[in-house]
Length: 464
Image (cartoon, rainbow, N blue to C red; front, side, top):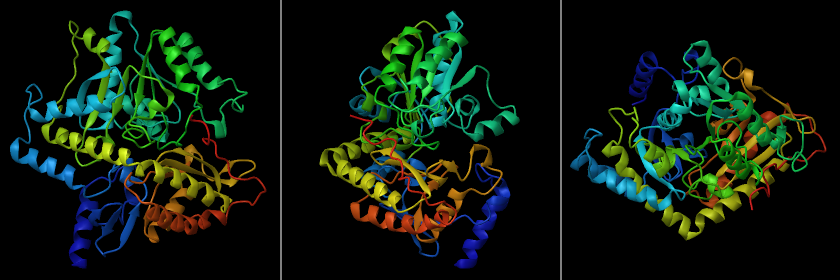
Protein backbone atom coordinates (compact mmCIF):
# COMPACT_ATOMS: atom_id res chain seq x y z
CA UNK A 1 0.00 0.00 0.00
CA UNK A 2 2.70 2.51 1.05
CA UNK A 3 4.82 1.74 -2.03
CA UNK A 4 1.79 2.10 -4.28
CA UNK A 5 1.04 5.56 -2.83
CA UNK A 6 4.67 6.64 -3.19
CA UNK A 7 4.60 5.55 -6.84
CA UNK A 8 1.45 7.60 -7.47
CA UNK A 9 2.93 10.66 -5.77
CA UNK A 10 6.07 10.35 -7.89
CA UNK A 11 3.98 9.92 -11.04
CA UNK A 12 2.05 13.11 -10.34
CA UNK A 13 5.11 15.16 -9.39
CA UNK A 14 7.03 13.94 -12.42
CA UNK A 15 4.24 14.75 -14.89
CA UNK A 16 2.17 17.67 -13.58
CA UNK A 17 2.76 21.28 -12.60
CA UNK A 18 2.36 22.41 -9.00
CA UNK A 19 0.52 25.72 -8.82
CA UNK A 20 2.01 29.06 -7.80
CA UNK A 21 5.50 27.81 -6.97
CA UNK A 22 8.91 26.86 -8.26
CA UNK A 23 8.50 23.17 -9.01
CA UNK A 24 11.32 22.14 -6.68
CA UNK A 25 9.06 23.21 -3.81
CA UNK A 26 6.43 20.60 -4.73
CA UNK A 27 8.10 17.40 -3.64
CA UNK A 28 6.06 16.07 -0.72
CA UNK A 29 2.36 16.94 -1.13
CA UNK A 30 -0.15 15.11 1.02
CA UNK A 31 -1.98 12.22 -0.63
CA UNK A 32 -5.60 12.72 0.45
CA UNK A 33 -7.88 9.70 0.61
CA UNK A 34 -11.15 10.98 2.07
CA UNK A 35 -12.96 13.95 3.61
CA UNK A 36 -16.01 14.31 5.81
CA UNK A 37 -17.51 17.34 7.52
CA UNK A 38 -14.71 19.65 8.68
CA UNK A 39 -11.97 17.01 8.33
CA UNK A 40 -9.90 15.26 5.69
CA UNK A 41 -7.45 12.34 5.92
CA UNK A 42 -4.18 11.45 4.22
CA UNK A 43 -3.14 7.97 3.09
CA UNK A 44 -1.59 7.16 6.47
CA UNK A 45 -4.92 7.70 8.19
CA UNK A 46 -3.86 11.00 9.76
CA UNK A 47 -6.76 13.40 10.23
CA UNK A 48 -6.62 17.15 9.55
CA UNK A 49 -9.10 19.79 10.63
CA UNK A 50 -9.82 21.96 7.58
CA UNK A 51 -9.57 25.50 8.99
CA UNK A 52 -9.51 27.22 5.60
CA UNK A 53 -12.20 25.25 3.72
CA UNK A 54 -9.47 24.06 1.34
CA UNK A 55 -9.08 27.22 -0.75
CA UNK A 56 -11.86 29.11 1.03
CA UNK A 57 -14.40 27.23 -1.08
CA UNK A 58 -15.66 24.12 0.76
CA UNK A 59 -18.09 26.29 2.70
CA UNK A 60 -20.55 23.49 3.44
CA UNK A 61 -17.92 21.01 4.52
CA UNK A 62 -17.08 17.70 2.91
CA UNK A 63 -19.48 14.88 2.05
CA UNK A 64 -22.74 16.84 1.91
CA UNK A 65 -25.26 14.24 0.72
CA UNK A 66 -27.85 16.65 -0.66
CA UNK A 67 -25.36 18.24 -3.05
CA UNK A 68 -23.76 14.93 -4.02
CA UNK A 69 -27.16 13.42 -4.81
CA UNK A 70 -28.09 16.40 -6.99
CA UNK A 71 -24.87 16.02 -8.99
CA UNK A 72 -25.34 12.26 -9.39
CA UNK A 73 -28.90 12.72 -10.58
CA UNK A 74 -27.82 15.25 -13.21
CA UNK A 75 -24.90 13.06 -14.32
CA UNK A 76 -27.31 10.23 -15.01
CA UNK A 77 -29.88 12.45 -16.69
CA UNK A 78 -27.89 14.89 -18.85
CA UNK A 79 -24.23 15.59 -17.96
CA UNK A 80 -23.60 17.99 -20.84
CA UNK A 81 -25.32 19.94 -23.57
CA UNK A 82 -23.95 22.91 -25.55
CA UNK A 83 -24.53 26.32 -23.95
CA UNK A 84 -26.89 27.43 -26.73
CA UNK A 85 -29.49 24.93 -25.51
CA UNK A 86 -31.69 25.20 -22.42
CA UNK A 87 -32.29 22.37 -19.97
CA UNK A 88 -33.69 21.85 -16.48
CA UNK A 89 -30.54 22.46 -14.39
CA UNK A 90 -30.16 25.96 -15.82
CA UNK A 91 -33.74 26.88 -14.94
CA UNK A 92 -33.32 25.57 -11.39
CA UNK A 93 -30.00 27.40 -10.97
CA UNK A 94 -31.46 30.71 -12.14
CA UNK A 95 -34.42 30.38 -9.78
CA UNK A 96 -32.13 29.57 -6.85
CA UNK A 97 -29.92 32.57 -7.58
CA UNK A 98 -32.87 34.94 -7.81
CA UNK A 99 -33.73 33.95 -4.23
CA UNK A 100 -30.35 34.92 -2.76
CA UNK A 101 -28.77 37.56 -5.01
CA UNK A 102 -28.87 41.23 -3.95
CA UNK A 103 -31.82 43.11 -5.39
CA UNK A 104 -31.55 44.13 -9.07
CA UNK A 105 -28.84 41.59 -9.91
CA UNK A 106 -30.99 39.32 -12.04
CA UNK A 107 -29.06 38.45 -15.22
CA UNK A 108 -26.47 35.66 -15.14
CA UNK A 109 -23.61 34.26 -17.16
CA UNK A 110 -22.39 30.85 -15.94
CA UNK A 111 -18.76 29.79 -16.32
CA UNK A 112 -16.55 27.39 -14.37
CA UNK A 113 -14.38 29.54 -12.08
CA UNK A 114 -13.99 32.88 -10.34
CA UNK A 115 -11.26 33.79 -12.77
CA UNK A 116 -13.65 33.31 -15.69
CA UNK A 117 -16.40 35.20 -13.88
CA UNK A 118 -14.09 38.21 -13.55
CA UNK A 119 -12.93 37.93 -17.16
CA UNK A 120 -16.59 38.08 -18.23
CA UNK A 121 -17.21 41.10 -15.99
CA UNK A 122 -14.30 43.03 -17.51
CA UNK A 123 -15.43 42.24 -21.05
CA UNK A 124 -19.03 43.20 -20.27
CA UNK A 125 -17.95 46.52 -18.74
CA UNK A 126 -15.69 47.41 -21.65
CA UNK A 127 -18.27 46.47 -24.27
CA UNK A 128 -20.94 48.39 -22.36
CA UNK A 129 -18.89 51.58 -22.67
CA UNK A 130 -17.39 50.81 -26.08
CA UNK A 131 -19.14 53.72 -27.83
CA UNK A 132 -17.85 56.15 -25.19
CA UNK A 133 -14.32 54.76 -25.52
CA UNK A 134 -14.15 53.93 -21.80
CA UNK A 135 -12.07 50.82 -21.08
CA UNK A 136 -9.92 51.28 -17.95
CA UNK A 137 -10.61 49.17 -14.86
CA UNK A 138 -9.53 50.20 -11.37
CA UNK A 139 -8.87 47.51 -8.73
CA UNK A 140 -6.74 47.64 -5.56
CA UNK A 141 -3.21 46.70 -4.54
CA UNK A 142 -4.34 44.22 -1.91
CA UNK A 143 -6.40 41.93 -4.10
CA UNK A 144 -6.57 38.67 -5.98
CA UNK A 145 -8.97 38.25 -8.91
CA UNK A 146 -7.71 35.21 -10.82
CA UNK A 147 -5.00 33.69 -12.98
CA UNK A 148 -5.90 34.52 -16.60
CA UNK A 149 -4.90 37.65 -18.49
CA UNK A 150 -7.46 40.21 -17.32
CA UNK A 151 -7.97 38.78 -13.84
CA UNK A 152 -4.26 38.54 -13.02
CA UNK A 153 -3.76 42.11 -14.21
CA UNK A 154 -6.51 43.22 -11.83
CA UNK A 155 -4.71 41.35 -9.04
CA UNK A 156 -2.53 43.43 -6.76
CA UNK A 157 -0.49 40.70 -5.09
CA UNK A 158 2.92 39.36 -6.25
CA UNK A 159 1.38 36.89 -8.68
CA UNK A 160 0.73 39.84 -11.02
CA UNK A 161 4.43 40.69 -11.04
CA UNK A 162 5.31 37.28 -12.43
CA UNK A 163 2.56 37.54 -15.04
CA UNK A 164 3.96 40.92 -16.08
CA UNK A 165 7.38 39.35 -16.54
CA UNK A 166 5.77 36.77 -18.83
CA UNK A 167 3.99 39.59 -20.75
CA UNK A 168 0.63 37.92 -20.10
CA UNK A 169 -1.25 40.92 -18.69
CA UNK A 170 -3.63 43.35 -20.38
CA UNK A 171 -3.58 47.13 -20.80
CA UNK A 172 -5.85 49.58 -19.06
CA UNK A 173 -5.81 48.41 -15.43
CA UNK A 174 -4.90 50.73 -12.56
CA UNK A 175 -4.54 49.95 -8.84
CA UNK A 176 -5.94 52.08 -6.04
CA UNK A 177 -4.92 52.29 -2.36
CA UNK A 178 -6.66 49.99 0.10
CA UNK A 179 -8.89 50.69 3.12
CA UNK A 180 -6.17 48.95 5.13
CA UNK A 181 -6.67 50.63 8.50
CA UNK A 182 -3.96 48.62 10.25
CA UNK A 183 -1.39 49.89 7.73
CA UNK A 184 -3.05 52.96 6.24
CA UNK A 185 -1.29 53.85 2.95
CA UNK A 186 -1.75 57.52 3.86
CA UNK A 187 -0.45 57.15 7.42
CA UNK A 188 -3.80 58.25 8.87
CA UNK A 189 -6.21 56.87 11.45
CA UNK A 190 -9.91 56.17 11.12
CA UNK A 191 -12.19 58.11 11.47
CA UNK A 192 -10.03 61.25 11.46
CA UNK A 193 -8.73 60.14 8.03
CA UNK A 194 -12.00 61.27 6.40
CA UNK A 195 -11.74 58.12 4.23
CA UNK A 196 -8.79 59.42 2.22
CA UNK A 197 -8.47 56.02 0.54
CA UNK A 198 -11.90 56.20 -1.07
CA UNK A 199 -11.64 59.91 -1.86
CA UNK A 200 -8.43 59.12 -3.73
CA UNK A 201 -10.45 56.70 -5.88
CA UNK A 202 -12.54 59.64 -7.10
CA UNK A 203 -9.30 61.52 -7.86
CA UNK A 204 -7.99 58.54 -9.85
CA UNK A 205 -11.14 58.22 -11.95
CA UNK A 206 -11.12 61.91 -12.84
CA UNK A 207 -7.38 62.03 -13.55
CA UNK A 208 -7.22 58.76 -15.51
CA UNK A 209 -10.21 59.36 -17.74
CA UNK A 210 -11.83 56.59 -19.81
CA UNK A 211 -12.60 54.50 -16.71
CA UNK A 212 -15.27 51.88 -17.35
CA UNK A 213 -15.41 50.15 -13.98
CA UNK A 214 -14.13 49.85 -10.43
CA UNK A 215 -13.70 46.19 -9.40
CA UNK A 216 -13.21 45.41 -5.70
CA UNK A 217 -13.40 42.53 -3.22
CA UNK A 218 -15.94 43.70 -0.57
CA UNK A 219 -13.78 42.00 2.06
CA UNK A 220 -10.29 41.39 0.72
CA UNK A 221 -9.53 37.68 0.81
CA UNK A 222 -6.06 36.18 0.48
CA UNK A 223 -4.37 39.56 0.69
CA UNK A 224 -5.42 40.58 4.15
CA UNK A 225 -9.06 39.95 5.13
CA UNK A 226 -9.37 43.73 5.01
CA UNK A 227 -12.77 44.94 6.25
CA UNK A 228 -13.42 48.56 5.23
CA UNK A 229 -15.05 51.18 7.48
CA UNK A 230 -18.83 51.40 7.42
CA UNK A 231 -18.92 54.46 5.13
CA UNK A 232 -16.54 53.05 2.52
CA UNK A 233 -18.79 51.30 0.00
CA UNK A 234 -21.56 53.88 0.13
CA UNK A 235 -18.93 56.41 -0.91
CA UNK A 236 -17.62 54.07 -3.65
CA UNK A 237 -21.17 53.68 -4.98
CA UNK A 238 -21.67 57.45 -5.02
CA UNK A 239 -18.33 58.04 -6.75
CA UNK A 240 -19.12 55.47 -9.44
CA UNK A 241 -22.55 56.99 -10.05
CA UNK A 242 -21.21 60.54 -10.22
CA UNK A 243 -18.53 59.53 -12.73
CA UNK A 244 -20.72 57.15 -14.80
CA UNK A 245 -18.55 54.17 -13.90
CA UNK A 246 -19.75 50.61 -13.26
CA UNK A 247 -19.19 49.20 -9.78
CA UNK A 248 -18.18 45.51 -9.83
CA UNK A 249 -17.73 43.41 -6.70
CA UNK A 250 -15.71 40.20 -6.62
CA UNK A 251 -17.50 37.90 -4.19
CA UNK A 252 -15.63 34.78 -5.28
CA UNK A 253 -14.26 34.30 -1.78
CA UNK A 254 -16.41 36.56 0.41
CA UNK A 255 -19.78 35.38 -0.91
CA UNK A 256 -22.11 32.57 0.14
CA UNK A 257 -22.57 33.46 3.81
CA UNK A 258 -18.81 33.47 4.40
CA UNK A 259 -19.11 36.82 6.22
CA UNK A 260 -22.53 36.10 7.74
CA UNK A 261 -24.67 37.42 4.88
CA UNK A 262 -25.37 35.82 1.50
CA UNK A 263 -22.92 38.30 -0.03
CA UNK A 264 -20.49 40.51 1.85
CA UNK A 265 -21.44 43.74 0.07
CA UNK A 266 -24.83 43.50 1.83
CA UNK A 267 -23.17 44.53 5.10
CA UNK A 268 -22.88 48.02 3.62
CA UNK A 269 -26.38 48.23 2.12
CA UNK A 270 -24.99 48.78 -1.37
CA UNK A 271 -25.90 47.07 -4.65
CA UNK A 272 -23.22 46.84 -7.38
CA UNK A 273 -23.82 46.85 -11.13
CA UNK A 274 -22.03 43.52 -11.55
CA UNK A 275 -21.26 40.81 -9.01
CA UNK A 276 -18.91 37.91 -9.64
CA UNK A 277 -18.78 34.76 -7.55
CA UNK A 278 -17.72 31.10 -7.62
CA UNK A 279 -16.16 28.83 -4.93
CA UNK A 280 -18.97 28.55 -2.37
CA UNK A 281 -21.69 28.77 -5.03
CA UNK A 282 -21.66 24.98 -5.09
CA UNK A 283 -19.65 24.44 -1.92
CA UNK A 284 -16.84 23.49 -4.35
CA UNK A 285 -18.61 20.26 -5.26
CA UNK A 286 -18.60 21.29 -8.94
CA UNK A 287 -16.66 24.11 -10.65
CA UNK A 288 -19.01 27.04 -11.22
CA UNK A 289 -18.45 30.73 -11.84
CA UNK A 290 -21.23 33.33 -11.95
CA UNK A 291 -21.25 36.83 -13.41
CA UNK A 292 -24.42 38.62 -12.33
CA UNK A 293 -25.53 41.97 -13.76
CA UNK A 294 -28.43 44.36 -13.61
CA UNK A 295 -31.14 44.19 -16.26
CA UNK A 296 -30.02 47.62 -17.48
CA UNK A 297 -26.69 46.15 -18.54
CA UNK A 298 -28.42 43.15 -20.13
CA UNK A 299 -30.71 45.51 -22.09
CA UNK A 300 -27.70 47.20 -23.68
CA UNK A 301 -26.75 43.90 -25.26
CA UNK A 302 -30.19 43.44 -26.77
CA UNK A 303 -28.87 45.23 -29.87
CA UNK A 304 -25.14 45.16 -29.14
CA UNK A 305 -23.10 41.97 -29.41
CA UNK A 306 -21.94 40.28 -26.21
CA UNK A 307 -18.96 38.58 -27.76
CA UNK A 308 -18.32 36.04 -25.03
CA UNK A 309 -18.79 32.33 -24.36
CA UNK A 310 -17.01 28.99 -24.21
CA UNK A 311 -17.65 25.26 -24.45
CA UNK A 312 -18.38 24.77 -20.75
CA UNK A 313 -20.53 27.89 -20.28
CA UNK A 314 -23.82 26.99 -18.54
CA UNK A 315 -22.56 23.45 -17.97
CA UNK A 316 -25.45 21.30 -16.62
CA UNK A 317 -23.32 19.25 -14.25
CA UNK A 318 -21.72 22.40 -12.81
CA UNK A 319 -25.13 24.04 -12.36
CA UNK A 320 -26.71 20.97 -10.76
CA UNK A 321 -25.00 21.57 -7.42
CA UNK A 322 -26.12 25.18 -7.01
CA UNK A 323 -29.81 24.79 -6.03
CA UNK A 324 -28.94 22.11 -3.47
CA UNK A 325 -26.18 24.30 -2.04
CA UNK A 326 -28.53 27.29 -1.77
CA UNK A 327 -31.00 25.20 0.23
CA UNK A 328 -28.23 23.97 2.53
CA UNK A 329 -27.07 27.55 3.15
CA UNK A 330 -30.60 28.70 3.92
CA UNK A 331 -31.15 25.89 6.44
CA UNK A 332 -27.84 26.61 8.14
CA UNK A 333 -28.52 30.35 8.34
CA UNK A 334 -32.10 29.96 9.56
CA UNK A 335 -30.99 27.56 12.30
CA UNK A 336 -28.97 30.37 13.92
CA UNK A 337 -26.01 28.05 14.39
CA UNK A 338 -23.94 29.86 11.76
CA UNK A 339 -24.18 33.17 13.60
CA UNK A 340 -23.45 31.67 17.03
CA UNK A 341 -20.34 29.84 15.86
CA UNK A 342 -18.99 32.84 13.92
CA UNK A 343 -19.29 35.01 17.02
CA UNK A 344 -17.52 32.34 19.03
CA UNK A 345 -14.78 32.02 16.40
CA UNK A 346 -14.03 35.74 16.55
CA UNK A 347 -13.96 35.67 20.36
CA UNK A 348 -11.51 32.75 20.42
CA UNK A 349 -9.22 34.38 17.83
CA UNK A 350 -9.11 37.61 19.86
CA UNK A 351 -8.23 35.60 22.96
CA UNK A 352 -5.57 33.65 21.07
CA UNK A 353 -3.89 36.83 19.85
CA UNK A 354 -3.51 38.18 23.38
CA UNK A 355 -1.10 35.36 24.22
CA UNK A 356 1.12 35.63 21.14
CA UNK A 357 3.41 38.64 20.54
CA UNK A 358 3.73 37.56 16.89
CA UNK A 359 0.08 38.47 16.18
CA UNK A 360 -0.21 42.15 15.28
CA UNK A 361 -3.79 42.37 14.10
CA UNK A 362 -6.92 40.24 14.16
CA UNK A 363 -9.64 41.15 11.66
CA UNK A 364 -12.63 39.58 10.02
CA UNK A 365 -16.33 38.91 9.78
CA UNK A 366 -18.42 35.77 10.13
CA UNK A 367 -16.29 32.74 9.23
CA UNK A 368 -13.69 34.90 7.43
CA UNK A 369 -10.70 35.99 9.54
CA UNK A 370 -7.05 36.86 9.25
CA UNK A 371 -4.19 36.87 11.76
CA UNK A 372 -1.51 39.30 10.62
CA UNK A 373 1.88 38.32 11.99
CA UNK A 374 4.57 40.82 12.96
CA UNK A 375 8.00 40.93 14.54
CA UNK A 376 6.97 43.84 16.73
CA UNK A 377 3.44 44.90 17.66
CA UNK A 378 4.44 48.43 18.54
CA UNK A 379 6.26 49.23 15.28
CA UNK A 380 4.19 46.76 13.19
CA UNK A 381 7.40 45.51 11.59
CA UNK A 382 6.40 42.46 9.52
CA UNK A 383 8.25 39.19 9.26
CA UNK A 384 7.90 39.32 5.49
CA UNK A 385 6.84 41.78 2.80
CA UNK A 386 5.23 41.35 -0.60
CA UNK A 387 8.52 41.02 -2.49
CA UNK A 388 9.51 38.02 -0.33
CA UNK A 389 6.77 35.85 -1.76
CA UNK A 390 8.11 33.13 -4.10
CA UNK A 391 11.76 34.04 -3.48
CA UNK A 392 12.43 33.28 0.22
CA UNK A 393 10.86 31.28 3.06
CA UNK A 394 8.02 33.01 4.88
CA UNK A 395 7.37 32.97 8.61
CA UNK A 396 3.74 32.15 7.90
CA UNK A 397 4.89 29.09 5.93
CA UNK A 398 6.61 27.86 9.07
CA UNK A 399 3.54 28.47 11.23
CA UNK A 400 1.25 26.70 8.75
CA UNK A 401 3.68 23.77 8.47
CA UNK A 402 3.77 23.39 12.25
CA UNK A 403 -0.02 23.48 12.38
CA UNK A 404 -0.23 20.81 9.70
CA UNK A 405 2.13 18.56 11.67
CA UNK A 406 -0.34 18.84 14.53
CA UNK A 407 -3.37 18.06 12.35
CA UNK A 408 -4.61 21.51 11.32
CA UNK A 409 -4.76 22.81 7.75
CA UNK A 410 -4.64 26.59 7.44
CA UNK A 411 -3.90 28.66 4.33
CA UNK A 412 -1.22 31.31 4.70
CA UNK A 413 0.15 34.21 2.67
CA UNK A 414 2.99 36.64 3.26
CA UNK A 415 0.71 38.88 5.34
CA UNK A 416 -1.43 36.52 7.33
CA UNK A 417 -2.87 33.20 8.31
CA UNK A 418 -6.27 32.90 6.64
CA UNK A 419 -8.96 31.49 8.94
CA UNK A 420 -12.00 30.44 6.90
CA UNK A 421 -13.42 27.15 8.22
CA UNK A 422 -16.48 25.42 6.76
CA UNK A 423 -19.69 27.15 7.84
CA UNK A 424 -20.71 23.82 9.36
CA UNK A 425 -17.88 23.83 11.90
CA UNK A 426 -18.85 23.39 15.56
CA UNK A 427 -17.67 25.29 18.63
CA UNK A 428 -15.82 22.17 19.76
CA UNK A 429 -13.96 22.03 16.45
CA UNK A 430 -13.13 25.72 16.74
CA UNK A 431 -11.59 24.98 20.13
CA UNK A 432 -9.63 22.09 18.63
CA UNK A 433 -8.23 24.38 15.94
CA UNK A 434 -7.40 27.20 18.35
CA UNK A 435 -5.50 24.78 20.61
CA UNK A 436 -3.33 23.72 17.68
CA UNK A 437 -2.78 27.30 16.49
CA UNK A 438 -1.79 28.20 20.05
CA UNK A 439 1.13 25.79 19.71
CA UNK A 440 1.97 26.60 16.08
CA UNK A 441 2.24 30.35 16.70
CA UNK A 442 5.06 29.73 19.17
CA UNK A 443 7.29 29.18 16.12
CA UNK A 444 6.93 32.89 15.32
CA UNK A 445 6.83 34.04 18.95
CA UNK A 446 10.47 32.99 19.25
CA UNK A 447 11.44 35.68 16.75
CA UNK A 448 8.93 38.34 17.82
CA UNK A 449 9.82 41.11 20.24
CA UNK A 450 7.71 41.30 23.37
CA UNK A 451 6.09 44.71 23.86
CA UNK A 452 3.38 46.21 26.04
CA UNK A 453 1.30 46.93 22.93
CA UNK A 454 -1.79 44.70 22.74
CA UNK A 455 -2.84 43.08 19.46
CA UNK A 456 -4.92 45.30 17.20
CA UNK A 457 -8.51 44.40 16.31
CA UNK A 458 -8.84 46.66 13.29
CA UNK A 459 -12.21 45.36 12.07
CA UNK A 460 -13.91 45.18 15.47
CA UNK A 461 -17.05 47.28 15.59
CA UNK A 462 -16.78 48.53 12.01
CA UNK A 463 -19.97 46.87 10.75
CA UNK A 464 -23.24 47.97 12.33
